Image (cartoon, rainbow, N blue to C red; front, side):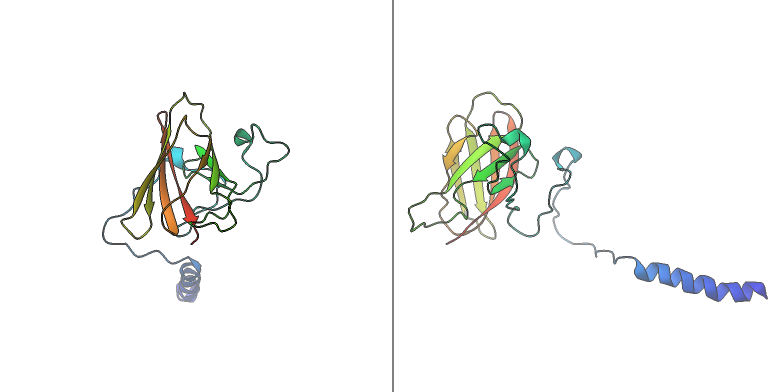
Length: 171
């Protein structure tokens, strides 16, 4: 008789536990993005949602503050792998700038690197549009203009290092 009394209680508890669990995502078909390796994950970094890496407005990472004073607050975008930061002096980036300002970006590399150009391969999200840019001498000051408004996925390579990020250009 006790078993019959306990059975409904166990069913109710089990149902309550499964009902509060978050739903599992349905398996996706088609090609999937390769998972990031542990070396590419930056602890505490904001997760990206959709196209466009997070533009931070707080202090630059400590390793990127050389030449700046104080806590160096400037809009910046961290590379997905945490190996480079783009300090965006021309924020927001734009295809046309009627005020005469420029799309100035200071690229700062985390790992020490020997001299060598920074190669930027950019692809506009949802299109086949592509552009290449080069910063002579490696990460450093640059003016990076892209031909169309939209979200651009940048693959950055320099002196044996690489990283990626998304930058949004306004019309």
